[in-house]
Structures are given as C-alpha cells and as structure tokens.
Length: 470
Length: 102
Image (cartoon, rainbow over all chains, first blue to last red; front, side):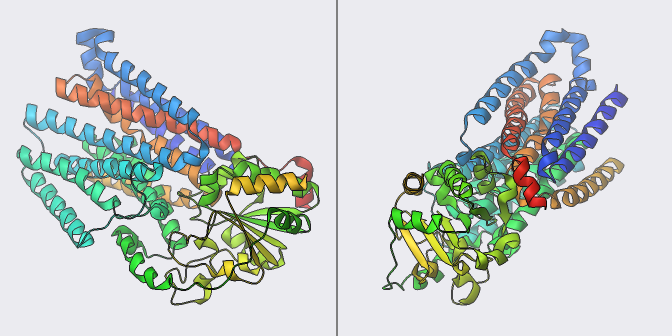
C-alpha cells in the first residue's frame, strides 16, 4: 500500500512541475493547468488510500471512514467554485489574499491536529517532527491572519492606509524573535503544551501587526510574500507528515512567491530587506516635505479635445493603473482601442510591474476586455518606444509614470523604474482629481507642456470619448 | 534522523526547480501564476485528508475536517479561477498576426 501511495505521489509531483512549465508561455498555459489538475487528482487518490485511512476503513466501513472527507470536500468545492466563478476580475487581489488565508489556516489546523495526536494523546513526539510542526503553525498562522488583513484592506473593510504606532518595527521584530525562541523551546521539550499553544497563537497576532502598517499600494509585495509563506507552511506540513509531494508543492509555491516579491520590490526600487521588515511607514515623513510644491498650473482638456488628439494619432500607448481597476474601465479601454485600430492607429499597452494591487493585475483586466495579449507590453519592452508614440494615454496611473523617479534624487520614488509617458509627443492623463498618488508626491508629468488632463471618472470619460469618435 | 535529511534534500531541489521554472513565467501571466500555485499549495489537502479520515481521535478529526474544507476551497477554486483567467488571454486575430510577423 505504501508503494502505491508513493507511486501516485511521484506522478503527482512530476505533473505539477510539468504543468508549471506550461505557464511559461501564454499559448501553453491552459495545457499546463490541465496537467496540474491531473496531478492533484493523483495526489488525492494517493491520499485516500493512505495506510492510516485504510486501517480505519477495515474497522469502520466506507461511510464512517469517508463521511467527513466527502462532506467537507463537497462543501469546499461548492464554495470554491462559487467564489471563483462569480468574482469580478477587478477584485482578483482580494480573491488571492483570501485563498492564502484558507491555505494558511489549513496548514495551521493540520499542525495542531498532529500535535494533539502525537503528543497530547500518544505522548511520543520526537524533536524533528516537533520542529516541523512548529514551523507549520508559525507560517500557517502568520499567513492566515496576515492574509485576512490584506483581504480587509483590499476590499475596503479595513482602512487601506498605513496604520502606524510608535516603535512599530522594533516591537514587531521583538515579538517575532520571541515567537522563534518559543519555537526552539518547544522543540527541545515537546511535552510542554503551554509552549506549543503559545507558538500556535503568537503568529496569529503577528500576522495582524505585520500587515497593519502597510498601505494599499504596497499590497503587491504583501500578497506575494504571503504567497511564499503559504508555500513554506505547506512544505513544513510535508516535513511533519513525511509527505514528499507536500514538501515539493510547498517548495514550488514558496519559490514562486519569493520570485514575485523580488520582482515587485525591484519595480518599487525597494531592497528586499526593506520589504521584509515592513519599513513602509517611513515613506510618509519624506513625502510630507515633497508634497508642498504646487502652484503650477495644469492644462485641462475637454472630452472633445482628448478625442481629437486620439483620432489624429498614428500610435497610442495606454498606461493603465489601479484607477482603471477601481473605475472598472478596462472594457471601455478595449472599445476605444477597437475604434482607433479601425482608424489605422497602432494601440499598445505599457504594463508597469506594480500597476494595480497584485503582480499581473492589469494584464488580466485587459485580457478580460478582449485585448490580445500580444499588445500587452512589459516596461522594458516598450519604454524606448514612447518617444516615437503620438499619444500616451494614462488611465488611472500616477506614480508609475512620474518622471521625477528618473531625475530628481530628492523624490522618494527616485530610482524606481517608470514608464516614459513624458517622452510621448503628447500625453493625456485621465484623473479623478488632483489628489496625489500613493507616494503622496506631486507628479511633474501633469504640469509638463505636452500633457493635458481630463478630470472625471475614467470610465465615464472614456465612454464619452468613444461616443465622440464613433 | 535520516528521513529529515531526505526531506531537506527534496525541499532544496524542489525549491531550485521551482525557482528555475517560475523565473521563465512572463509578467503577463503573473496573476494566473499566483492563482495556480495557490491551487497547488492547496495540496495541504493531502495532510488534512489523512487527519480527517484516519480517525485518530475526535479533535484531530474535527480539525482535519475543517482543514479539508479550507484546502478544497483553494484547490477547486484556485484551478477554476486560473482557468477562467487563462481562457481570456487571446492572441491577435490571424490576419493581424500575420502582419505582425512580416
């Protein structure tokens, strides 16, 4: 029986990695997904014939053995499908944050369950298993509450701005260190239940405290980090249960979250250490001084002016930002592009890595609006083309098109890679108001002589532009 | 003692393989990638299933059953939403594509 289980797990692991490889290109991605789904079927198959379950099956019969599994599996599937089928693409970041919370909770619960079985009931927990379970509940708990906080902030249930208090980083790091010491202590003495439940409870608090100080626009980094932690929690579960497919899948998930958080922190010009220790609150102080400029005048353009600029353009580069998601403007962006393309205008999209609230957010929204992915360009691909473009159309983006990042060392975003929207022949910025972006600084792009601003909800404005052009 | 080292080797190698493969995923697909890895990490379902099905004791069974619920939401929901996203990614229509290749 053990041989069968391990064979099935081996096939599952192979299919997971093969499936992941499919994701390296858009045209093979769905095939990869099917392989991974198949892998999951093998993994589950291997598990329901696990020796411990089979032992119970012989005593208790099929129904008694599988009733809880079947019940929760069907309810879980129904909830999973309902959430995934109904949620709008603009709310994808919340959806991902919520699923990290479920993943963390599942790992933490299995950890507690294992501790209860091996230590509280049987009384023979060895040190290595204890260490694995310790890491499992640590990462699981941290991911659970941290992701719930991220979910709350992204969905607006909790204020999205950064909540700060004195000595925040110091106390957080101290508490994290304290939890780690408890983990070491319970590894040395697994029989101390108070220590174990402290190790299980502390991360729940830590998750809340770590994410509280982090503002909405930094969420891409938070989500990717929590993705990584969810993977580590799954891996730790694998160590606790001596289950290799869990170790492998968890390691892959952890690596994926790690890569994405490095990509995100690079795109924000933050060091990885700076991201890890949540020194986000610092941005405020530096920016207070910067925000004081102003007094300059911006050029306002009516919908008609904007439509005229666009209709006369030979090439247009759209720079979408989080504002596009908030206004749900992706579909009307697609309609506008269709009209312009029918007119012979080349329309492309410049996607900044941190535009939106999670990695790749803008790509998904634009794909939803039936825009071919071959027109979606990464920052490096398209940045040299802005100088040849007639119009850069900025839809709900701000800091990612701020030229100050390129030449003003005093700016807090100096050094961050930005889209060269300022180099296009002219630039149309769709903005709700003159309120500064997340970094709280003025955007000199708005005051440039070749920039015009059209105020209002991006969706309304673009709808009117589309009407004017058709 | 040997088992833990075997596990660490597997973890290390899997992390490198994961790193190598995922490095090649274009930014275009980063959101589906997150949903995808999320579904895969719902593999903790495997651990929960044993806890829920082996009936070691009532506490383990109840905790395991809740864990199965959470993990299933991730596995089924994660694959579902990844598919929903990937279905949206379309290439240009053939004639525009041919022009692009020329």
